[in-house]
Image (tube, rainbow, N blue to C red):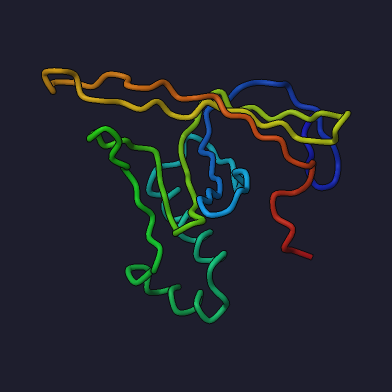
Length: 163
C-alpha cells in the first residue's frame, strides 16, 4: 500500500532498482531526507541536471533562479559525477551542494512499505558497491559490498511547499 494524493493505493510489494536522491548533512544530527525516487533508466546527465535544479531551488530565491536560468556554467553548486573511491571512478553517484548536499545514486533492492501501527513509511535500499583495482591494476573487484539502509518517516508528502 502506498500513499498518493491523500489516499492509500494498493500495489504489489517488490524490490526495484532506482535513482535515490537524499539530503545528507554532516553538521546537524539529522537523518537522511528522501528528496526523490526516479527510474533507474534515467541517464546520469539527466539526473545531474535535476540535482542541480533541486539544489538551486533550495538555496536561491526567484531572482537567483532567474540569474542562473540561462547561465548554467556559472552555478555555484555544480553536480559532481563519477566519484573517486579507492582511486577508482565510480559512476552513477552524484553530489551537489555543500553541507547539506544532495546525494543521488542508483540503488538496488529499493522498497517502501507502510506500518499502520506507527503510521510510518519504511523505506529500505542497498547502496551501490565500492570497487578497487585488482593487484595487477588490470581490472576491478568489489572492495566493499553496498550496505542495506533503512529509513522510517512519517507518512506524508515529500514536499509540503505547494498549496
